[in-house]
Each structure stands twice: as C-alpha cells, then as structure tokens.
Amino acid sequence: MNSMIEWFGKTVGGYVASSPRNALWLLKAGYAVNALQLRFFPDRRLLPHQRYAAVTCSTAIRRPLSRPDRSAVVNLFFPCEILHAMDIAPQFTEGLACYLNGAHTEQTFISYAENTGVPQTYCSYHKTLLGASLSDVMPAPRFVANTSLACDANMGTFRSIATHYRVPHCLLDIPGICTKESIQYVADQLKELVSMIEDTIKEKLDKDRLTEVILRGNRSIQMYREYLTLLSEKNLSTDMTSEMYKIFFTHVLKGTPEAEQYFQLLVQDIREAAPSSGQKRILWIHTFPHWQDSIGTMLNFNTEHPILTCDLNFDNLEELDENHPYESMAERLLKNSFNGGGKNRAERCIVMARKFKADAAIYFCHWGCKQTLGNAQLIREHLEAEGIPVLVLDGDGCDRKNINDGQMTTRLQAFLEMLEANR
Image (cartoon, rainbow, N blue to C red):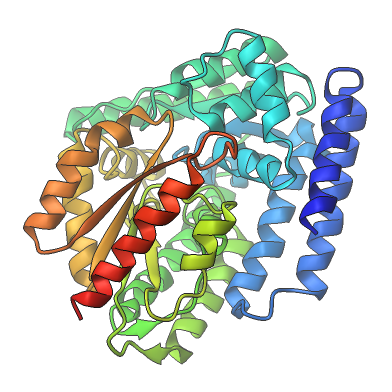
C-alpha cells in the first residue's frame, strides 16, 4: 500500500507545475477512493467513533476542494460556527496539510513554497498549504479569515493566500488577556467579519440558524465533558491519526450535525471501555507525527502505554451563549489555553493531567512552531514539579524528510522503558 501511495504522490507532484487542475482532480479522486476504503474496509482495531471520524474528516477536506465558491480558508482556532450557519465549508491549515502528507505530496508543495521565498524554518503545515495555494492546485476560496491566536505563521500565510487569489481577508486580532474591554474588542471584530462575509457572498446571516449551530455545539461540548470525565477511569484504545481527527470535531466542525454524531459515538465508546488497570497513561502535548510508522508502531493501540489525548483537544471547553454569540465567541478565544503566555498552557496541561490521572507526558516540538519550541522548558518544569515525567521529543508533524527517525525512536523507547521500570 505504501508503494502505491508513493506512486500516487509522485504522479500528483508531476502535474503540480504543468497542470494544477489535473493535480487537484487526482487528489480529489484519491481522497474519494480512500473514503470508500475507510467506510467499507476500516481498520478492525478502530472503535465506532474512530471509524466515523475517518470517513467524516475525509469528506470535510474534500468539500471545500469541490465547492470552493462555498469555502473559506481559516486557521484552527477560527470560530467556524459563523461559517456553518452560512453553509460555508472551512478549509484549515493543519487538516489539508495532513491530508496532502497522507497522499505523499507534501514535499512537492513544501518545495514549491520554498522556491517562492518561504523560509525553510517556516512551519511545514503552513508551507504545505502555501505551496498548494501558490501553485493553484487548491482552488480559490471565497475568502480567507484567521485569528492571530496562537501561531506567528498565521500573520503571513493567510495574507499571502488572500493576496494570491485576490479574495477578501479578515484577521481577528486576539489580545493576550481576557478583560471586559478585550471581549468587546474581539466581539466587534466578529461583527465586522460577518458583514464582510455577507457582502462577499451576497447573503445575510440567519440568526436563527446561528442559534441552532451554537446549541448543537453546546450539546457536543456537554458530551465531550462527560467523555473527559470518564477517561480518568477508563482505558480507551486509540492511535495518533484518530487523535488528529478529533481536532476536526473539537474545532472547525464544532456545531455541525457530524460533530454531534461523533461525540455521541465517543461517549458510547468510552462508557463501554474497560476500566484502567495499571497502565502507564500518556498525555500528549501539541500535534502528532501521525504519519511516522516507527513512532506509530510504539504508540498506536498500545494497551500498556495508552495515549490519553493531546492538549489541542482541551484548549477550551466553554459553551457559547446563543443570546450573545459574538461576545461568547470572543471570550472563548481570549480564554483559550494557547492564548497569552506559555504559563497558561502549562497550567491547563497540569489541570487535565490530574483529571486524566496521567502518568507521563510527551511534549512534541514540531519543527517551525516557535511558540511550542519556546515553551518546552517552561511546561516541562511545571509538569515535572507535579511529579509527571516529560519526554521532549523533537520532530516534524508534516514533513517526512525533516526528521531524525532513529533518534526519535531510541528516545521514545527509552522513555517507555523508564515508565515500566517505575511501575
């Protein structure tokens, strides 16, 4: 299968410069075939919510590629409830980059971006998205919108994409502290965003539809909280790819019927899971190198050292107020654990590590993510002060050529052996 995917990636790559439309057609066809495989021939180790996520996320990535006139390029933390209320499909950086990686095409797009002047030290997720955009393989979205939270690369990537496609761009500036004044400041920007979207697509936002989306999202959050509570006592089989899929539902798909269905299945699976019984449970911090077979062999479906979840999936669990949607969205952004200083993220990780009864943490330093790299020592010190051993693992979540596989494998193996010795 890997050789076939590699061949597919090379074939797509051969069309990027000469015929972007053919490259896009091949990608969409490949993802459609993959979705059928996931639906009818899933990995038997996957639980119902994981099988559902695999199919749903594939659809979510293909939709904006097939209907770019009803799509927007956004970042992970953008409040997509507004988009769902207006039938606009979000395409987000990490999601598309991961799927392009899965098709073995990320190198083509990274090289394309670097050849246009994007630095090698830039985040590989963003380089992949930029390469897909600047090469015109990704079709032009209706508009681009992003927050300043929590990545420096956001400031350049989304502006460049909007400029390239000559489409409207909205940047939501998120202050580092949550106050009454900052909530109103962000809420006003959200109202301006809605006006921009209405002018762009020539349609008005239906407030009743937004309320429906918000209430559905609140029900999802309530179920997710139940899942997180049960996780402290349960051992749920999982893998890195499924945890990456979860990011879709905790962020860009929140408020959709698909997300609500996902959380229903998630709660059902955790209720039926076996009780935790002496396993060394690992809290993951930051994104996953889900494509890296050597790491996957050690961590995926590991019954002795199960992955609990990653901190991207508990950055904020607040419900929205349907009567004050913009103010509550603003407050959610401002209170996000990725906003402000690194201490906010560290304290959030400590709270959740206690809640999940985590025995250890792996802090993944994704290449090019300055915030994560810069916070590594601070968060490690905070967690270890609580008695939680931490492995700081350097790697790349998207670029398969930018890793030291042997070193990563050796360090991870030694860390797992240390946990076993401390039983």
